[in-house]
Length: 108
View 1 (cartoon, rainbow, N blue to C red):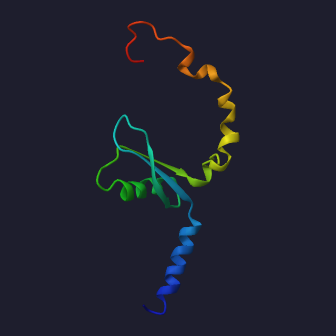
View 2 (cartoon, one colour):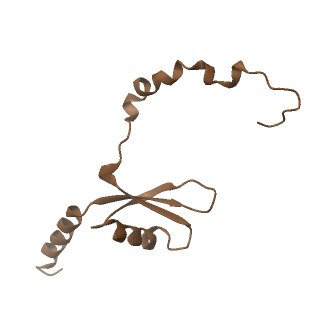
View 3 (cartoon, rainbow, N blue to C red):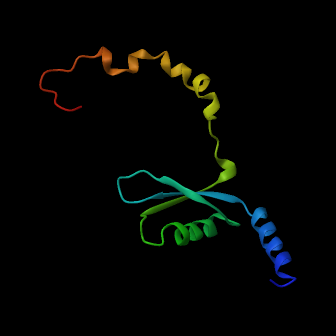
């Protein structure tokens, strides 16, 4: 390892940290949902999309790619799941146990 290679690596890592983080979602084939496959750093959406294609669909396993700025994603916390999802428990009418299936309905 040369004396300057450590500082070059530090510069490259600092540049990557300065670029926004993008979350990548790939839809493997028509009719399936997009699935989160990973993250990458890129300066803009266009380059993020191209890099995601090159990195996550090298074997042509996708038909659609979404890239989303990680800073734009808002998520609930798994630690607060009971308090967050409790209001849904009050709506028992949404459960199909209160309805009778008509004769001959088959699979619904």
